[in-house]
Image (cartoon, rainbow, N blue to C red; front, side, top):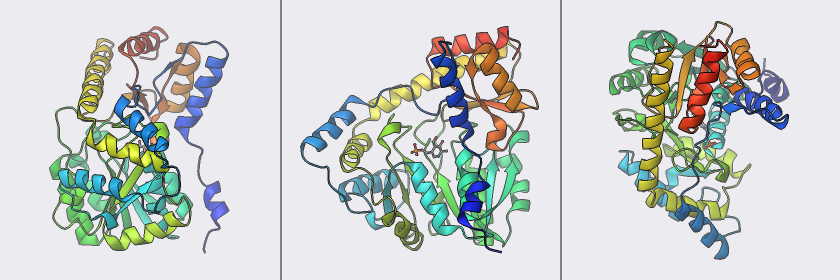
Length: 382
Ligand code: PLP
């Protein structure tokens, strides 16, 4: 039976990351000094030249509607960036959105129908589940927690989960919340299954620019994947532009056209002058991005070392700015306790489909990271 849209929305939980942030803000409003390790945004300012490009574009009058797919100059710059990653897309195969989240929502809503089967790799970013449920799809989840969140050792499990009934598979490497970067062998395993069972794949590459000594492969570059992969990326993380709301998706024209209909009848486009700033971000921020990535790498190493001093071993992330801390089975209770007692905010692993962990974001200064871990240890949470 077809489910009403309101019923589908009822099935969805509010965002756990936002819930923890709200709790942390409540405490802060009461004057408590909270070490917030729950946030999914870089603690660096948007690069100065990008801000200036946005201001210049506003001054130049770029404040009206743009074409629904986004201004041609930005789509050209995106096509060049994708080509650098080995992905061949014309500007007609690219749609600019107000953030990668909107890109994902449009793709999932346009492609997933009632009863469609969607496979997720757990732990998975919180909104995938919600988007699939709102579209009426059913989830099959493959747990990567026994393999240090790496996909390669779990390919047999993935094989068992993917069948001719599978309609969509979502891959996110580097991953939020684990920071894992999937190996080429793992991605080839995904490719083999996608081709065998004729599955469309979303490759969410929003953390692709934030890696530590590894070069993540874009799924769409693998043989057999170009006509079944939709690549999603955005400006929030690599260029510290979370509040600007700018992202995009690119893929084979048939799939893009389908999602594009939803796009043109809903958001229309991203903000005009923001799109102009996006061109500057793609073309002139190499140094700023390198410096930010280096800072994240040093913080990752610091957190891993500090945890080791407390005999806590973590799967060392190779990308993004998150890691999964093994905690009590009831991770929800652990996170609430850590916030109330130690005043340290983290996100329960169960929000990502993997209980028994808390996600730490190291998008915080070294001083705050030290303080947070010290407090967790003092209050008996490590
Ligand atoms: N995909 C993943 C895996 C994310 O972690 C996020 C944001 O946290 C997004 C997509 C959405 O990013 P944006 O800010 O561009 O909407």
